[in-house]
Length: 440
Ligand code: IFM
Image (cartoon, rainbow, N blue to C red; front, side, top):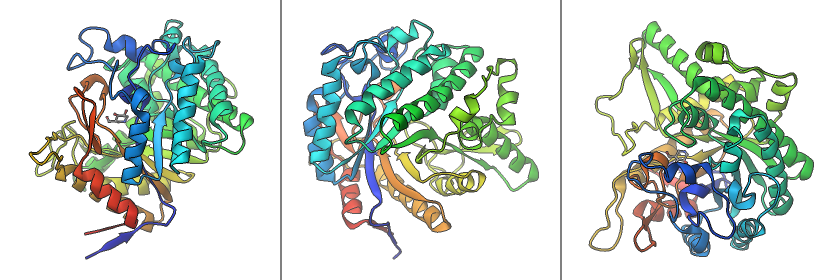
């Protein structure tokens, strides 16, 4: 038997995002967000659902924190609904919205759970979208002002601040394929948005540090390893190109201070103008970087291999390949001078059922997590500085364009009754956290 023991202060946690769990979409003065608008537009969400109620976390956060305690999580990663606090995106503060996050943070601290806060997990106030959204550089300044509001109120209790979750998904899904809000399909807009997200990140970091120098500032990037299908030089080169084209667009500006050659190739004439000083702003030193990892691409010189023979796939159609996590961590560790890393999301959607005993037996999710924890441990032995791990997700929730059809939770949510049930994977995770080790 092999035992993998984690450092005593390893930050075990789970993650969620405001639009995916909160519900209460128009309560207590909250403004409309682009996801409210998008999900209310017929034909946009696979099961025609919305986040109007979601997991009703806005009303049930105490119950959810009690569940977090039962699992023994040391950290909870959540995001702020910008439009809940600033209904118009800027200007007048909605105190009831701000108070909600204040109570949430107070309850977490009282339960000895480290709050790990994301400022932007995709729910831009619709009022700002009406002025051009992220295509408009003014939105970057609105983001900085919103950041200041939040850190003034919560900076005394929240140490970990993330500016953006997954800028590449905001760019590509929101503005190129249009599968996500705001549903734009325009390469020129998409690359302009990408650059403005980076500028806003830089301004956000400045706002955090100038308001409260004690807080730790970071960003969360989602990375898919690109593995070559064979050891042939052609496949290896193809995998490298695939990695550069999809993963370095945000890594390079943040950690090298310039856009990669691949970005210019990819964007062509749509490459946005970069103003003097932007790159220095974007490349400010961070206190940590969050990495979201779910799967990999297997690449050959003839294109991606869609179905890898013998591999297991999740309900998202993503291949299960935990060793790719170790390879990816080693790759970024050698390609960049990185601050400490947190795995800020990792998890899997499977078809769960409630058994006759009332429990949810989800061995495939449990095994998925176990394999990824082990590969993280191996990467740490290789020398990668990983400080914590947030499972996606605490609760089953609204999976964006897929609605409620994909369940990622450690805790099952019955959307008719809002009843929560900790799944086997959640019970197992509790034991991992309690013993701080995994064995196989
Ligand atoms: O649900 C999402 C989350 O909001 C961002 N990262 C990926 C998850 C699963 O698709």
